[in-house]
Each structure stands twice: as structure tokens, then as C-alpha cells.
Amino acid sequence: METNYSIPLNGSELVVYDSTTSRVLWILSMVILSITFFLGVLGNGLVIWVTGFRMTHTVTTICYLNLALADFSFTATLPFLVVSMAMKEKWPFGWFLCKLIHIVVDINLFGSVFLIALIALDRCICVLYPVWAQNNRTVRLAKMVIVGPWIFALILTLPIFIFLTTVTDSEGNVYCTFSFASWGNTVEDRLNTAITMLTARGIIRFIIGFSLPMSIIAICYGLIAAKIHRKALVNSSRPLRVLTAVVSSFFICWFPFQLVALLGTVWLKEVLFSGGYKILDMLVNPTSSLAFFNSCLNPMLYVFMGQDFREKLIHSLPSSLERALSEDSSQISNTGTNSVPPPEDIEIKAI
Image 1 (tube, helix red, strand yellow):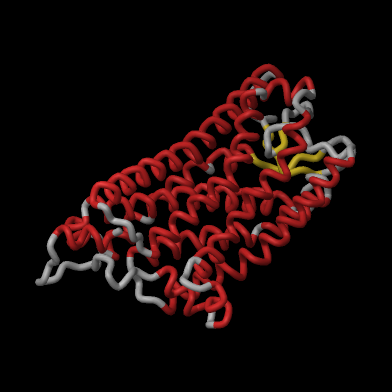
Image 2: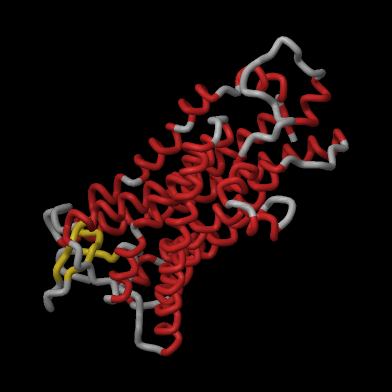
């Protein structure tokens, strides 16, 4: 580690490239990120166009529009990350883009999981409290509530604002990294600041950025499943099926990365100073690439969760997206009406 106590963004030494396995994983990671960029920009751009300009704004479409905006913004930054990875973590884009790119990455990655949790919570409310939802679940309320995940994500990105910068090593190589050169008068002070910040950041990212949202989602699904079982409701609507696929893909893609990041936090001192646990260094790129790949999956799930796979390919993609993301015609309306169905009927339609 440099004498100014700069630490790579992943919290460990630079990823190793000195074995065949590590080089294969390195190349595979760049390929996955490139595919994610291509599919993510096109797919999420299409979702933004359809939900933002072609469809009537409902609570559901507003939620998925914001999720698509988060995924689109994130995938648009991937070329910078691919170039840096190809240069073995060097950063040729300067100080401003060092901060900007990683701020965009963190805000949108946090924002994605918070939005997915919000969508699950909304679906749960529709099932458990259908009458209240019919009378109060409005587009105006959704537009106000949807700001919350973005503000929360911005707050959790503060370490990037404060500590991230470009650092030049003795050989003239420039890295985009956490630097603690001005955070203490002595070497020991800077070291303590680095360890404290990285440990706190790792724990917060795992608990608030992953475990808490996934717990909310799990609780919501448990309550929905209990209601379905109790009322003997066997058919679920398309929005619930789409949400199930979105949540499942998110967990499968993100859990390996979150586990590696958590272990890196637990063994931070050993990884930084003794060079131990090299396997974690080798797994950083492939697990992060898998996590990032999730950002291009959602548009495909929206399109192909319909009734017939081949029909989705033959018909226009915008029409397919409209069918996948729209409120069901039988779903509760966003405004109250003079003719309100019986509570039992509303409950069935809300599923």
C-alpha cells in the first residue's frame, strides 16, 4: 500500500493476474461487462421509451421506469470500467470522471435494489389491503414515494464523494482509488481512518444495500404467499410474475458479489497487509461482472414473461413491453370509483 494510504476501490490489493485461472477470469469478466453494456443500454433504453412515452402512467409503470433509468445509467458507465479493467485497474480518464463514474455506479446500484424492494412492498400492500390501495394508491403518491430510494442511495454514496480520487504510484501509473493522505497527521491516524472507513462501508453495503432490502422482499413474499394460501387464490397476475423473476435474478446475480465483499471486509487487515486470501482477489472481477449483468436482465424478463415466447419475438418489442409492464385490466384502479367491488373480489383481482 502506498505511503499516502491509498486503497483500491474494492478494498483489497490490485486483482492478481499471475496465473492462468486469474487471467481467464479477467478476460471473461471483460466479455460479460461488454455484453452487459450492449444489452443493458438497448434494453433499458427501450423500457424507458415505452414506459415513459408510450404507456399511461400508473404506479407500476412509474416504478419500472425508475428501475430502468437506474439500470440504464449504470450500464452506460461500463465502457469506462471495461477499459480500466483491461489496463489492470489503471485509470486513464482523470480525476473528474474517477469520481463521477463511480458516483453514478453506486447511486444506481443502490437505487436498483431499493426500487425492487419498493415494488415488492407495493405489491404486498395491494394484496393485503386491497380496499385501501384502491382508494389511496395513486400516481401522485407514487411519484412522491419514488424519490425516497434515490435520496437514500445518494446518502450511501457519500464515501465516494469524500474519499475517492486519483492516485499516482512511483511508476507513474494512475489509479482511481480511496485515498486517506489528508485524513490524519500521522501514519497511524491515516491507517486507522482507512480501516474504519472501509470496514464501515463494507458492513453498511452488505446490511443496508443488500440484506435489508432482500429481507423486506422476503417478508412481502411471505405475506403474499400466506394470503394466497388462506384465500385459495391460485392464479397470480402478470405484475407479480414479473416481480418474482426480477427479484430472483437480482438475488442470484448479486449474492456471490455481496458474499465476497463481506468476506473481504471481515478479513480486511489480512487482505491488505499480509497478502492473504488471494482467492478473494481472484473472485472480485467475475462476481462483480455477474452482479452487473443483472442490469441488462430486467428488460428481457419484462418481454419474455408473457404467454408465448415466439409471439414476443414476432410482434413488436414495444407492444410486448407494454403488456408485461402495464397494470392488469383486472387490477385495482388508481382512483376510487362510485362502484366498488366487494372486498373479496378486490382481493382476488389484486393478486
